Length: 410
Image (cartoon, rainbow, N blue to C red; front, side, top):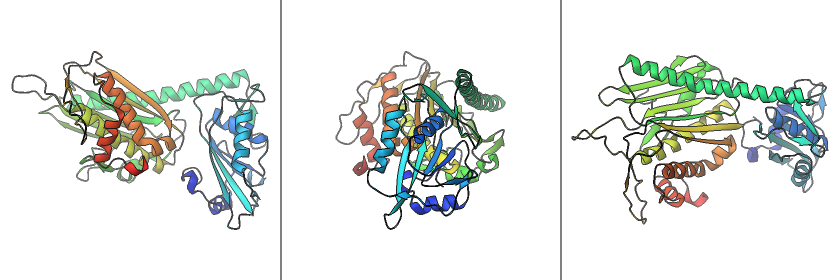
């Protein structure tokens, strides 16, 4: 599928097969016979709206590809020609994925341009004077945006942001309700990991598939653990609105975790990392919380990569970590990698009782740069709770020692 396959692996035949299926042009799909100046308008319009793909070398007929596809003459510097059109005509710049696909004889080529939905709209063309948006109208797929249309787009994105925030609230409320039923209170380190399309504007999958089929495919292992946590001993998620959830609790230690998937691409994990355990003197135990945070972030993002691969989503994602109720909690230092100085400091409770960290990236950036994202986040969290000595290279080394990074490819 041209929407989800790794861009470098798309071939001439993949595009031919896609066109033979006679997909109609939509707000997300456009066919072009040649590389010309209209390309800038289409790319800017897609970036301003919801993203999409452009297939070059295909003539359209009644908004469908005219068969057989002919391609364009294959020659050097096709990619540079496309990049020059983009960089010379669109402000601010857009950086789509581009794949030039020659045929077996290197005579003809088909090209795929995958344009991500942008968070830096509006993108203008023609000396920064014209703003276009993508429409579902086949005879005029790019529409000049009036002030009202630009405001409409902003308002629509605000509504989708509100929808995303509501997913978090629903998940939080469900977890709270289940805790209340079991007489459990999360007293310390109420931790949330959540990831979702930046603007969740469309359903990505049948919610029926989220209980078992997709849940099984997103399960990952590492750090002597697995994720999602709920899918142990062949447990399966329970159905809820938009998707499914899993909940586990132990009343003796107040240990709780809750996980949720929905068909808009929302993936949520909430956990009491500290378990409210106390030592014999009644003081809250010092836990290796940084280590747990490192392992949870890595496994969660690895699982998320599988999730969005199954959903066929390749656009912008927002990842959020919330650490709440940090009063009376101490954090133990990360273990030192082999050959590194052992610090083994115990930090006092952070001055901030609640911490939140947010990152925005595309699916491809997540898939190709997951290790770097994990390292950056753990470094940022370490600094915020008082471990200024922890360096990215020591986090990277720990990940390598635990088989989470191929050191030869980093």
